[in-house]
Length: 291
Ligand code: HMG
Ligand code: MG
Image (cartoon, rainbow, N blue to C red):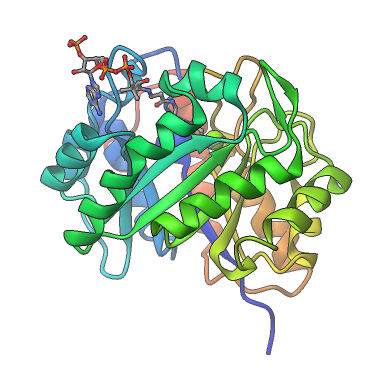
């Protein structure tokens, strides 16, 4: 049987959160609705964070209210604290995510907490989400290098990933936030992390700053990972990670996987249409009425 890989589309959240221009809710909804037809099981399209920290995500509840939900698709949201979880559940998010870091510098810059404080903050969020029967994903940022602290030890990534897993996150997504990873460093990191969390419950979340994300995905496949976070059009960046480029482009990953005979269940034509829309949103052009 051919290998199956799932791409978790994060463009409407990770992709758009860093855009300086305020993108209208209707445009975000149009992007999500297009992505909903492409065959994804999970699309991250909202983030219930402080609007002072990330103004672009302020309309997240409106986005969730405005989309046309496709059967079988889970619409996901970031929830850094209880306030975020309450708002996400009220807005109808199908799954939520807590997001921590393997490095202290980024943890402080991104969520204003040490790693230990953030884990203590996430525990009740995970518990309350589980009580509401809403699956919780966990992110670990800076799995290779931190923009503030420099290289990050694989053991540190394994420690944080293991704690999120133990807490009840059904999957832990490993973020090469500033795209400094190469297959050797990604492999060393995965060697350590897979000793703490089964590969089947891990995802690779690779930004493509240095153009190595596809190589890093190939290396991750060798370590048993079968889920990767991607963004149509290579959208993205993180407001608290200076120099971070976009997420690896969904269409590029799709082409690479299909060339290897790996199945994703995704429709390349719709993905390309969505990538074109994503590029137009980034360029600040209005969307067409017929999208
Ligand atoms: P804080 O300032 O320490 O928290 O921020 P606070 O509790 O003192 O609250 C400050 C203000 O924010 C208050 O409002 C709160 O009500 C409000 P004020 O009284 O000043 O008017 N507030 C909220 N508002 C809306 N929704 C909430 C919420 N919580 C508090 N949930 C906090 C702490 C975590 C809130 C803040 O640091 C924050 O929002 N950070 C988010 C940063 C972020 O979203 N970064 C990007 C996502 S992570 C990422 O992109 C990486 C990833 O892709 C993986 C990778 O690539 O590595 C996932
Ligand atoms: Mg990211």
